[in-house]
Image (cartoon, rainbow, N blue to C red; front, top):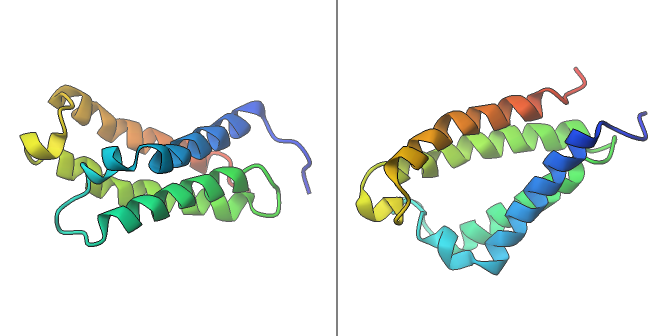
Length: 121
């Protein structure tokens, strides 16, 4: 059982905790980018924010690290639905330039790869 991990694992965890907190601080921003085919936008925004917070904290502890990393990977794959939806039209893009939305797609895969690197398999 490892007590300390590399600083960049804690950075990754902190990044998800902060991202999750933003779902509670600015929920309307996230509701604007929710695909129309998903129900209960507000509930999903809060649940995804809570998931990001818990999974971000979970990567910092050896007992929950691997499970949290798997959770982050699944979450990042699910978030691709939102990223593709935002590319579907001007309203869905919520004012974000198309080039930035396109750039987010490979970034999502980099985030998945980053998380995967910390798995103890």
